[in-house]
Image (tube, rainbow, N blue to C red; front, top):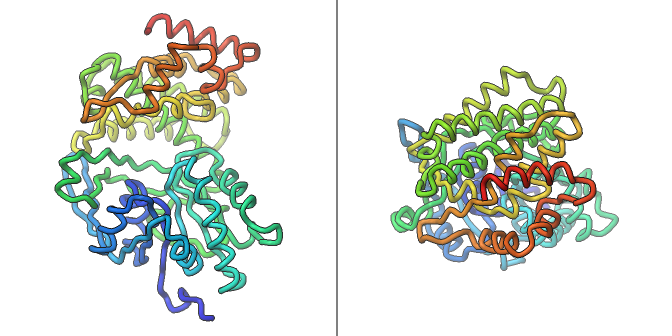
Amino acid sequence: MENPTSTGDKRMVIFGAGKIGRSFIGQVFGGHGYQLVFVDMDRPLVEELNRRHQYPVVIRGADFEERIIVERVRAIHASDRDQVVRAIADASIMAVSVGKNALTAIAEVVAEGLKARENRYPGRILDVILAENMRSAALFFREKLMEALPASYPLDSLVGLVETSIGKMVPIMTAADLTEDSLQVFAEPYNTLILDRNGFRGDIPGFPELSLKENMKAWVDRKAFIHNLGHASAAYCGYMERPDAIYMHEVLDEPVVLHFTREVMQEAAMVLMAAYPGEFSTEGLSDHIEDLLDRFRNRNLGDTVFRVGSDLKRKLGADDRFMAVIRVAQKTGQRYERIIGAMAMGFSFKAKDEQGRMFPGDEAFHASWKRDPEKLLKEVCGLDPAHDAGIIYELKQQLSAIL
């Protein structure tokens, strides 16, 4: 049977029609002539995408606004397994932007699509862009696919698992924004997609928006250790200084918050350089930090303290921004006083959304902390009382001055 992309028909399947899926991956690939096929659980969103076959991305710079229409779009509800399998079989390239927990959930249907693809087009490669903010995403998803595929399937030669560093900031859409247009999504102008060059098995698209890296682990850690860490630190320090503030630019207008956030990021930069000698320069990371601080303060973007700081169980978790960089700091002999201070501030974070509600998981986090702090430090933060006595002591010292 003919390969449908041999005639120049470029088709991208994107699992997750959320903010990053539409405003970043969809915008970049759609802008270069790809048909976009979104797979999502949100039925009204799927129906509206299929009704209009396009959606708007509103680019909000510090002093400008631009509206981009992404066209040639359709969507499939995730429960329509047959359609999803056919879409994977016929795709030119694929992306997933669903979050770590959902990666496990989609692995089975992706594996089914890969088997159907091999039956229809033997030997045809599929590269999968993992647009996830997580470390070792390729290894994690590979293991889930292997569990769902037959042992004879040549996964490593037919499927490229391409890790990314997702640096684009996309705020929460308010009820008023969605009432105006349920498909519109706001985003900052930043549009560089950092990708693992070595993850590809097929031809690599030559788009100017794609920045290919050889040592992808270093760049994933740069995102986690500096961008993610700095952003959350600003939210946590900002909430302590201005618990009434809504927007990130409001809290970063406070000199103490801006200064502390910069110190946290600079401390993390030293850890990063020690972990990856020769990959980064002091000047390059300093420029990156100042650029991020400017982007964090983008008033027009309307990014909220609630969005940036919420989901404490994940953000204060054992393998996320704070604990990950602390572990590396320990191994490399680097300081982490400011980092652990910012982490401690996260334990008092109780920001609310526009309906006046806390993130559901954060309510459970605070309840667990109140009920059994030692258990939470062990089960959520991964801190062992015997092996991590030093970190626990430092964290408790910081917490005693906050809580």
